[in-house]
Length: 90
Image (cartoon, rainbow, N blue to C red; front, side, top):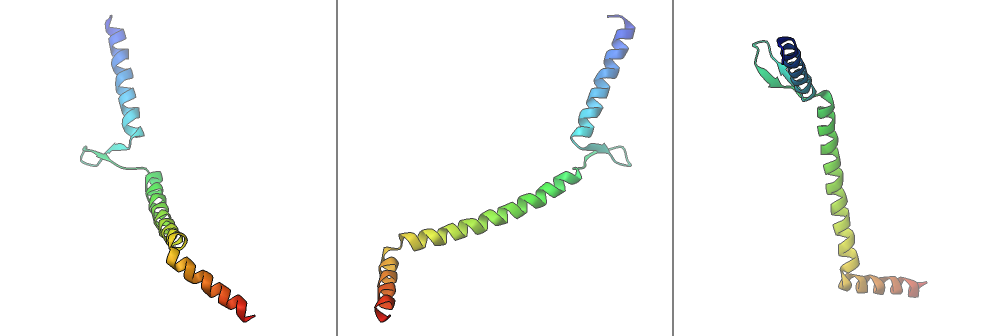
């Protein structure tokens, strides 16, 4: 490998490294230290994830209530009696 090819290879490697660091949100602060700065899309996705977690939690609670209503045999028998008694009154 001649010196020109080595210089080109080093430039290509450094450029690829810089592009990857920028892609993953690693930037230099005013002191020259490399720090991770997430994208604004990450903040939006964090908020969206929190909203979806809350929605899933609420849906799980609703499913638990529905399961309790469906599987509660004593309650369903009582409910059947109440419905029949209301039909008899008419």
